[in-house]
Image (tube, rainbow, N blue to C red; front, side):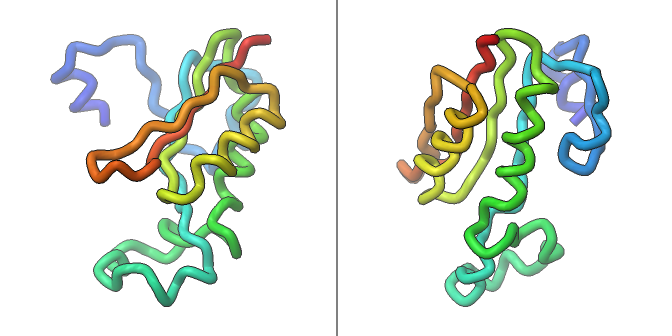
Length: 129
């Protein structure tokens, strides 16, 4: 990621390797981008077997696939500055559920973006308070 930022001429970007956001403390950010595991355990029999080159902890996230993103959304609000953005990659059927999680935590201006296959893939919300 740091090499990509240099190639793009981006500065003042901090990369943090953490267990979701639990060890961030009082530090705040303008943007948090997350690509958590989002496949539900009940979907294990329908996903492409080629994905199993990844560790299962990088694929599965609880029964419905929302366990990790629920934790991220819960903690992201306190870690973002006013006007900060939380962006989450997710499964193609999870956009509405993630928007609901964001709304419950106080995020506004919610939006879900489709990928090149025209499937919902990324949802974001903005912290306004």
